[in-house]
Length: 86
Image (cartoon, rainbow, N blue to C red; front, top):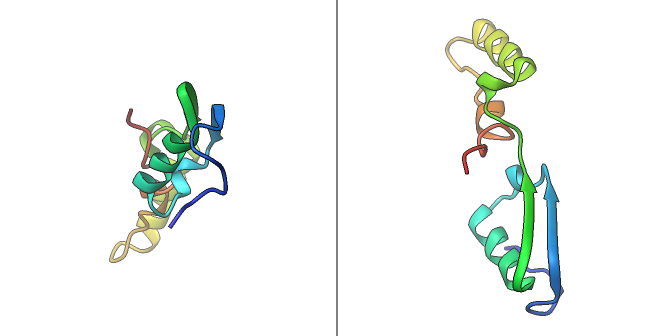
């Protein structure tokens, strides 16, 4: 479980660049982020777009699916390209 060693409302801004897609428990991590934000604080986060919008990820996923059709790789589609919806 994620629990940061910070007091409630301690930060005006929390920034997370490409980390949210790797949280083992996203709901808990975002709840913890909210806990440490001051009232009216800002949370800035970004993640990669979906596999279909990322040429490299799409090529890798397609190639792996061609090589292993019985067990296609879903890693890139799930993590890190699986959290792109707002």
